[in-house]
Length: 439
Image (cartoon, rainbow, N blue to C red):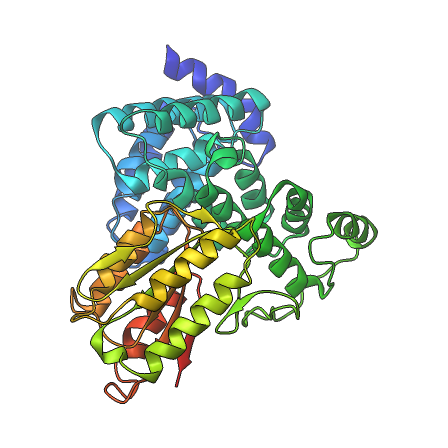
């Protein structure tokens, strides 16, 4: 009875949107057989086409088969076609409700990131307010549960940013209704990073509207992107951005090439080795291993304390010094008060040198302080793990945190710069940071 009612309720809507709704159960069965046959073809493009064609019958039976076969395919184009098909199906109320229930069912029985992301993508594609609210309610309940994992909505947001288009913008906007958007730095930054990849005027409008509601590094991200694509230099003046966009949005066109180079610091902005400091929660990590002996260590300490001395009190910071072990100055970030600056200066200047370069442990200790940005200075390869393994570990840990890691590689007589670009450079680049080579 439910199958017949679903088929009947979809008939008018689907035909109005150009869908090819079957007239009978026999036609549905024939479409399924064709799909299963075509899914055995060798070319991913042919299998992706099979997914798209079968998805033109967005009833529960079809969606169940797509979840099992389309997302299980070993080729990314087929899985992408499946995710897009589920989002298209989610525009219809019955399909959106079915995907919502499937999300709840999959959460209970297993954790499969790709399936949950695909289901969530279909849920939030609902065109009615009730369906969208129900999807966000389900998401918030899931995230509040013991099994909740932020990677599900954030991976979806990343995917939508890569795919682009006006529908991706609308889907991301719906995901900002979830509770983590107001509470978590990483979630907000994920949204801004995704919107910054989408070349749609609606994405610019969203960022302009969001600007006055943000601060610190998220606000800096928005200003940086708006400046790059519009060539306007309104900095954090949200009123100027709002007025300019109101006057120019109708005729605005994205530049053919968006400058993805390094952000230039303002003349009056605090920097560390030329890297602008935009965040309000910062951890400085300083390598104090024996190979830093002499001028490299003296120079590094002076540069660090000079930067800390110029921090405004609104910034919260900490310092970690490491060799084979890590010494964390304070158990939590502290305001950059005059007293704190004097205290940290005494600690840094009195720090001796030790054996080993436990970079992995130092980075983990920095993450535990819940910063927005880590400035990591070292002169050598880690002694507590393989460089590539540590980079992958940090990238994985950072999927939901969205901490920027800037790295400063110090060239010494002992290393001659060898190995720095194989560890420090990818560590920065894969964590939205800047790599500096200092000789």
